[in-house]
Picture (cartoon, rainbow, N blue to C red):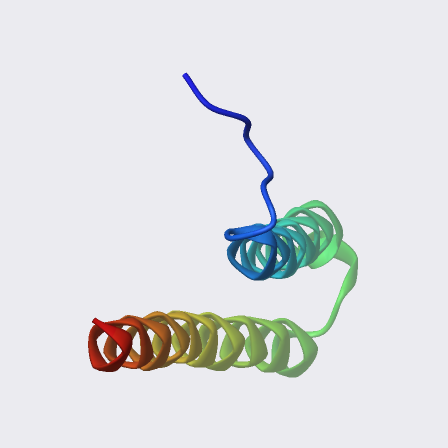
Length: 78
């Protein structure tokens, strides 16, 4: 098995790191909301869940777009 990080895949590893950090942020936000929901008003809980849903949707869409962009760019090089 080759090296995990090479000169050729450095950008992809950076991309994976950013995606991982964003997912961990979303997970922390979910944990915070679920653990504090009993002390929040219903409107505030609803706003948190709406924000998490939008953040998750944009995260999925953004990752898919970013991956497709780099795939097509790589296909043009070949």
